[in-house]
Length: 301
Image (cartoon, rainbow, N blue to C red):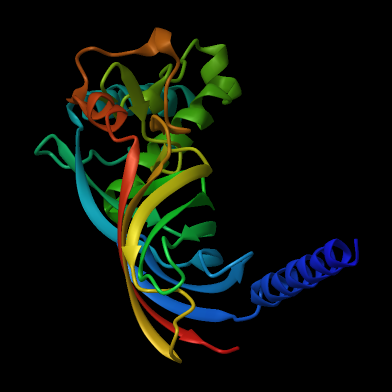
């Protein structure tokens, strides 16, 4: 009986010692890292949890990538509307008995207007990851977690040159003035209906127009919450004071879609407008974003 009691007591002591050792390993060290890769630059903090087999990582990526491109719009229909609007100006000035309204300028006589579009890739995101190392001394690891970022992954803002912009906005103001002029109403001189919809283009089966301030805005939206999985080499909490980490993986963001305040209602779709085809087919297939990251890590505790 005494032997059995002693054996149980020793077993309990060993179990308590192991539990204490396990508790000491949990959150014992803290690592920090700075990174650069396809998801931009970032910083992170890492701590071992339970054992050194599992490491919890939290961090943030922060830069935006900006680039410019040009969109060409056909202005032939717009110049036709300008000619029609100037005719209304002549009639109204005649009815008023004075040169009250000035003509508006035509856009580029070449029939085309170039809109410069600035695009931003919004890489900033928060991340929470769990790394699994097959052994406590292993540098190879699996990583899984989640990233939370902006829904507008790519945002685009476009405007034409100042001359074209001023001519366009002047025409809209003049058209609005004619529509609200009492003498024009008395003589049945009306503004041009939907004049603001003339400068437009298609993306797949949707029509988009230049807004009243002659601007274009669009975004490619993805899910804000993005699961992530990958593999890597190197420890986020290095065994020495400083270490190096390499990681490959991808986040999964679902099917992207194009959204824009410039989109016209479906009943105003113009099959004859300048068209950019295949955008929807291309982006619908891009449901993941790849990651290759180089990271300098350090252990501070």
